Length: 311
Length: 308
View 1 (cartoon, rainbow over the protein chains, first blue to last red):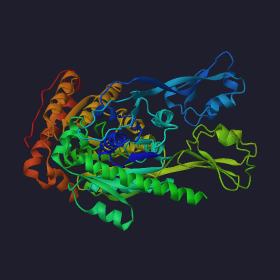
View 2: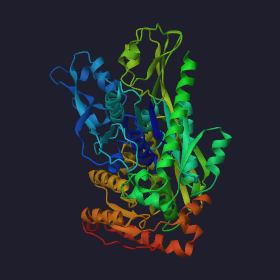
View 3: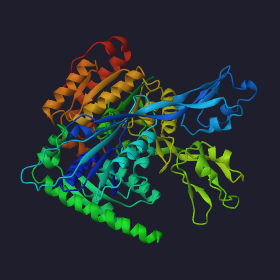
View 4: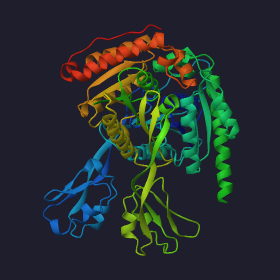
């Protein structure tokens, strides 16, 4: 089961929700993988002890031009056909790898085989296996938790290729695990980085806050998931800080409200200092237990519904 | 004319609330909202749109089902997973994933693929009570947010020249990827809005690294400064070490949310308390813009600390 945690607006509590849900799920016996897909600003590891057990570099294919084989001025086919202006003519073909999307067109159309592919590093994928303290009184039988985080190279512009790699690595960890859960912590917004995260989730949880900014960006995220045709529900974080317009909106559009996390100074302080809400704030374990069950119920229903539709 | 971009790395630290408060104070200015895929500044500034322009960037492939022979060569060669098979065995493009590279056009043996200019959103020139504003809306599921940011910046700079504005104030997007990079080129100063949390500090570090990569002078506003004392000290220590002057520290205040609910900025809902703070912030920023070289390299202590 793959569950994406997303939002339109930044700072609504995606990572807070993702880390608390993931740790609680592992403690409840689900082998859990948390994939931090916010590769521009990964934060989930700040809430988990431990250094990476593995760090992999991820690269994109970019062109390398062999000047000896290049037909030169009479051809210029690659320069004319590259849609991203990653190849230009300056007394020879010059490759600007930062602009390259790695589509492979230039290599495919070069009549003289002068273009081969080299790589441009886009960032790293870090894998951690955090050993979390089991709270007193918890039932034994906690399952394994793995954190897979992407970290985009500073000045790299394109996040989606690294996001897909993070999801791939998370999949490699979780594949074949019965009863396993994978959470994808999405970047904010509604453009390509967010879409690359939620596109193939079994279910998405949109996190919002009850403010005008929260509502406005929630609407955009809802439209995006409608466009993609993916099932989702909403969690209101910092419930009580603003007004009732988000609830009215959810009612009017019959969007499921999966749960709420109350607004409190204790919660703000715990998150600020990198602690888990379920460990630092009274009542939060119960809150996240209910939330996990509701999310899983909706996700299973959506999966069943999806299968019926295909059948 | 000087351009100040307000960014943060992490979302939700208060970029837009600070931008709105700055919009209501300081010199004559033009405003730009470059958070094009989740723009919020208009919720406070309530712009009256004067001009709407469709934004086209890049291309989108499409497969003519009448010509498609169902060979699947397009899908085999597409590196973005943007081609999928329909129930009738014909292939079709998933627009959310198509990057417009035209590989499918080149490999299709039946000439069934065409490339069309892609409408990715709209941009607007509007009047607000604080001056002209240029803003945009990226279409749902569309690409090219970086190019739309570049368009908003180009148009807002032109507007600023036309209006004789001293400053262009730009609300930026979160993160450090393509829309943020598009925001930074040729800007004069980055105002980084942060908060005392481990996440915001981590993201501030990456945003400062990116700004330095583009040789952009940085200054910081520590928002919600009283939420966590120890982490606030860590933010101050980071700023001291990296010579990022902290121009203001603002306490957590429910007045910010209350102002947002009314569609106003705190400099408007409680001018006695907040106007002097933001006028001071403007004075410091304008001073930094006038004398960039010495300021960028020397540390300025925390300029003003507002008690909660």
